Image 1 (spheres, rainbow, N blue to C red):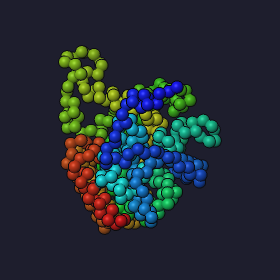
Image 2 (cartoon, helix red, strand yellow):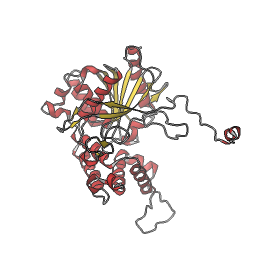
Image 3 (cartoon, one colour):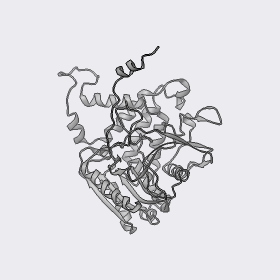
Image 4 (cartoon, rainbow, N blue to C red):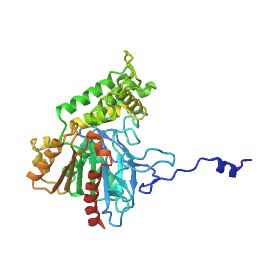
Length: 393
């Protein structure tokens, strides 16, 4: 017979979660039975989206905020999946009670985009027509397609208009596309550390990452899942290349300098410097949690994004029919999405006579700064979202 009292005495204490956390959250999968016509010309006959929500939707559904994730993000933006979790959602710094995106006021929605690998329909999902994983046969998706699927999500949740759509990096591109594609369906657009299109240098970095994956002996033309393997080395290299671009030179210097793992040089090709060890660790961790085909799709979506191309390559024309009010934020040492790229958006909005607020945050962290609790950044978000809260209350 089990001694329940003894088991309870011996059990480790349950960790109390931070007071400003949304607490324990549970993702849910929503099914969409109607076909989705994609920009590439193919059709998804049906699809699933994995989402998380925080806070409560008000009576008139006017307090909803959509969070769009970046390249390797997912639906888990805030809170914890279990009391044992040590790491909260990827934007827990900004989402929660009393935080800039205050869940005491807002109903916050975050999803894993189509083509992802965290529950939404993507390459690791089963193709209902074949009964096998989609793998490399999954259609190439674009930011346009994501926004169309997000509009379907809003419909299913009963949200006719978002109080705000918010995103950083690739997420910011989705915000921009929302304002162009569905101008009447959002009141505010918060575009963080983003750009109106990728530079040639950024496309080049993405191509190097893709070639690293596709050259891995375990890639099998994208059919690695059916072979029971993953292109681990390729994924590691892709993440290492990407991670270098997310940090500034100052941030890497301050964090690692030229510190050696040991007190001597070994004259070999192992990880001798701390920065080498760090990059290998990041690559190793990433290869265990992200799908290679999804990485290829996400980087292509980045490359293809260029909404001005549909308007004679004129960004001012592209933004002429937008009705949202904009907050655009950039970071001084971000060289992946430099402040100049954010100013392109701001200048086009001003030329189109659209309401926009802009701040360049002086921060040494590089592109990753958009994920961090930098005081001036958080204060600006809090002030702007506070004004939105007054509108919906």
